[in-house]
Length: 264
Image (cartoon, rainbow, N blue to C red):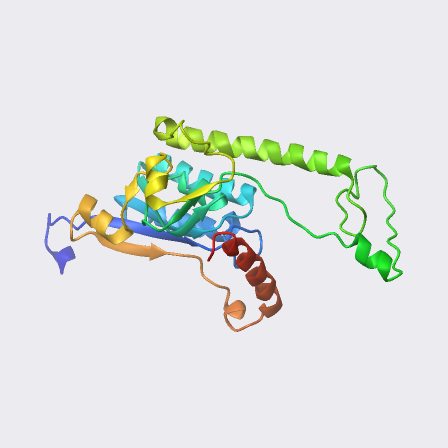
């Protein structure tokens, strides 16, 4: 009926983007391909007064985190829309990278925030296969083509090369956080060594702006009649009926490992 009343102003609208899960190129995780249409709709649908990010992520791919964050920042600038991030259980590593695309970041007292660093993990099977009489045969053109092969003894040169790559990614992460958070960041504590903190401590360190939840804060900013519309990735039809069980199982194990780092 409101549409039939001339000059009646509609309540402000806030579009909410759900960013829940690990950041990964795999189907079912958070990545730019999956989230691009979701984020685009959130900034264009209904002329929103703001976009709110509901974040619950232990991180993952630095490239996908960067692509998602850059898309959010670009659309916010193009549309002139303010962005608020609300952290639930975790915004760590790539999850925090995405949160830094927002103008303001809020969290729960018990949220876990930070882990600004880079990690690579794997297994070494060279002793195992040698004990079972298995020989590893690898043929390459290029001395570095088989670096970090888990079935061969660890090569110090490979490790040094990996650490150089990690250092480049880490520096990009640090620059991103410093650009986003600016002078709010504390200089009394080392923020970029991979450590993480709970909500209020993160606020004290300048990694977040306050303790609050999405709905009450949006009502405080835009009034009690604010309309909240939630946007999230849609699962493909066949996936919903179990067509990707094996892939989902792999993704599930990977996610459990990432969440476990934060006691969740």
